[in-house]
Length: 367
Image 1 (cartoon, rainbow, N blue to C red):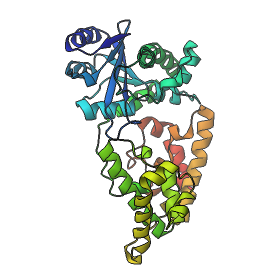
Image 2: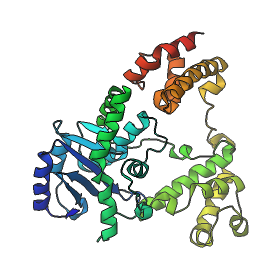
Image 3: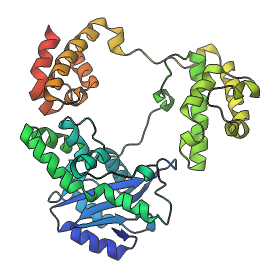
Image 4: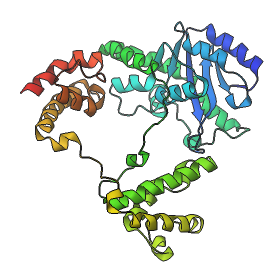
């Protein structure tokens, strides 16, 4: 493992990377430890070495960005979506000629397609998961943390070749190429959701007043998290927010009985939590948020029936192919087909999916 925190060693390493036909790439960020997460490490395996680059040291990664964008060099990543988004956000990088070993494993029908499971299956390597939740922004990093980070790319090139051979043997390599091409188009986008609190789970059974309390607790927590640069869940968890909104405590003893409420939360945030609940209870009825709209396939029985017919066709073919049905045609694609009545209007559907199952889905739709 070669640790790089200065510009000259980075440029020398990049020269070696640029001379290779294929490299493996990964990143580590600190999303579990800060509100404003950032790329803390970039790992690259190339030319027989594992490089771990420190972007927090002030060096310019621009030369490495040129390698990523070079279509003559194949880049192997595992679960590339998040890596591509944060590298695009932090450095403006884009990528060309990509293989994602996670996607490849899913197209092969692997039930366990995490990197640890694939390394154990193909190389007999058991990954020590002790550093999965590590704070990668800390410096200095321990030797064990650096070894863990380097392992993320060490086997990727060999793994990609094994998976490619299996995909070719099954006639699925073209499927994979289309999936990889779509990944190459990923760019970071700011979350412009005006009501991010609605993404929380278990809102369905709450009435409108409880939803108002959830909304205000979510906004309060987000403000504290931003100010402290901490993940929101470290201020207070989603489950506690839901339970507070459901119980609507008016006093400290009542708040203390809320499921999951710790002494720390009571002492640190008790007064603020009770004040938010009190304001929520006083909101006029006409100002309360509406409940989430029912899904269209629940409201429309005929639409639901069309989706169900296509789902049966999809599931049957997925069993024959031994892949996850969601890889063949996820539910949002079935809904789009049932709504549009045609394949060409469904941008989310891949060409390989159309060729493989498109006619069968349309036949089921017209029954």
